[in-house]
Image (tube, rainbow, N blue to C red):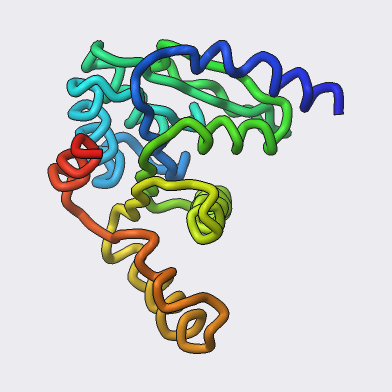
Amino acid sequence: MNEILKDFKKFPKILDYANKSVTFFGSARFNEDNEYCKAAHDLAFILGERGFAVVTGGGDGIMRAANRGAFESGKAPSVALNIRLPYEQETNPYATAKYLFSNFSPRKFALIEGSIAFVVFPGGFGTLDELFEILVLAQVGKKRAKIYLFGAKFWSGLDAFIRQTLAAQKTISEADVNLYEITDDVERIAREICDI
């Protein structure tokens, strides 16, 4: 409990900037030449050029690519919010601001609370956990933000399950399927985020 309270007390200093923030989620397991990493880099660079802080979980893969894009822009913060894990997860070297959390709860709060948009790239259980946390907050009206799922082929199966099972069996409302958008268009995401 003391470590959680310590995290909640200290991390806001890392996010003490005036820029609007966009959080990137996605797998740490992709190599830098992966198509999704290239797209994350390009999108983060564009957003950085336009003054948006880019926030990630601070690891490799998608997170490294997004932080590198923002870092190379040099016009806005590149933020890495990493966590201590049983296996080593180094914070990538492209952060201009970083914090190492000891617990998932304050880290998740920090990744979500201040951002006006989320771009969720392909990933595993951690990425899905973060995605559904945001969707629940949006569903109950606690978070107003654009949510993009990047990678139409990757997300098509989940989208079908949400529409054909959850919505069809009324475990969510028909309107809930509009809480997110699936796209492969970096320019469109950047344009729409800049219009927020």
